[in-house]
Length: 124
Image (tube, rainbow, N blue to C red; front, side):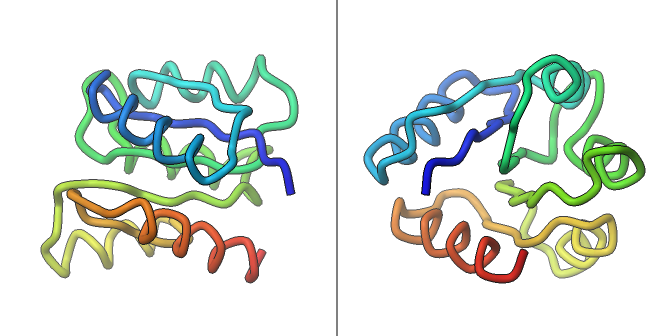
């Protein structure tokens, strides 16, 4: 199944790691954004985005603010995977309440990323 993926992270290095991992897992259609505001603009202009992978800690619009905005609008059904360094239970609960489908703590393995994506897609 070919997915159009939106990768949101203020770190170009982390975006590259995620993009390379996704490409190794067979995903080719990937759009990058550097923060939540940029990501939301791309959601509105790029058609057919199927899946969002977002960081939490970003300038302009954080990952959590971005998730809240996505869940509150026309893109509310899009699957969202949050990939972040924030690992305390309260943060994970807050992200889940905001509407992320799943959560990965950095650093992660390519296998973990694919497994989380597969699990989310099974349940959408």
